[in-house]
Amino acid sequence: MKSFCTFAFLSTGLTYLLIFIGGLVRVAGAGMGCPDWPKCFGRWIPPTSLDQLPDYIDPAQFNIVLAWIEYCNRLFGVLVGITITITLILGLKHYSNFSHIRWTIIAAFVLTLIEGWLGSVLVNTLLNPITITLHLFLALIIVMLLLYASQQAYYLENPDSEKLSRYPSHIQRLFGCLALLLFVEVILGTEIRGGLEMIRKENPIIDSQFLLHMLGPFKYIHTILGFIITGLAGWVWYHLVKKSIHPSKIVVQSSTAILLLILVQIILGEILVFFRVIPLVQLFHLWIASLILGMVCVQYSAWKMSQIAHE
Image (cartoon, rainbow, N blue to C red; front, side, top):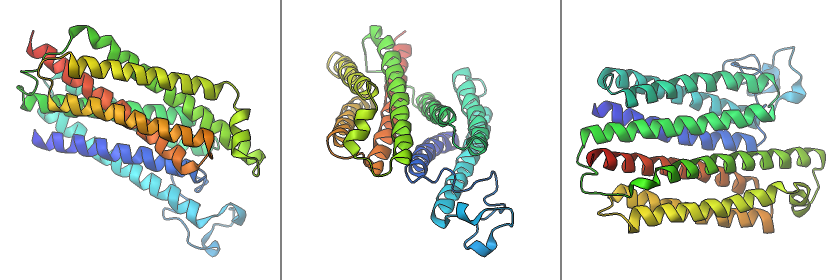
């Protein structure tokens, strides 16, 4: 059973890294670094020089740096797929009688297969913005499913982890609201980034502040929603840390981590608004949002375990 927890946590960590690498691919403009799929310029290993290109490939399409960035992204995706497959096998072996773990890991595996297929769709549709958003959305769901399965398996092995903790029973909806708002915020942020990329392509020398101005009300909605999320996260922290009896270490740490990460998000957001639209800052802005979603999942799992322990 420990092997399942090991691979479940490993899959979670690797999926988070893949989300980061996927963001790096986008900010580097390497999404079409390999113009075909699953091969790259007709080869299983990308070419390293123009003379290795197939005759039907336009040499102008080839950029060795972008090709290898995209290729590494695909290789890492394969690695994640393998670890999630192993996690599924171990989960079915050790936790087939626990439906909440069994179906969670099956769902993560199925969504991983869909993600692989979406990768080919992205190339075939020349990075369709809707497909990019869906690709990210599913990745966030996968990482939350993996986190949930990992934590629930840990609690089965350590049933007394939340035995002394008592959390308010009425805050269940707060977790759902917080997760939903975070998903909406991430989607909005993705659309804003997509809009900025389109404007940059058409006007490469345009000023960053004018770029933000052209986004219209979207940037204000994104900011306002960010403050709502901050308030809601603070409210959840208050109930879990201050209004609870003997809150567990994982609850205190995850709740505090959410507030600290939100503070970092605000700083990064202000840099983007008042200074420059820096691609690397955009990358971390998105990735940290995915970390916050994961922490909300950790909060909910711990709260749920406590409720079950005191039924």
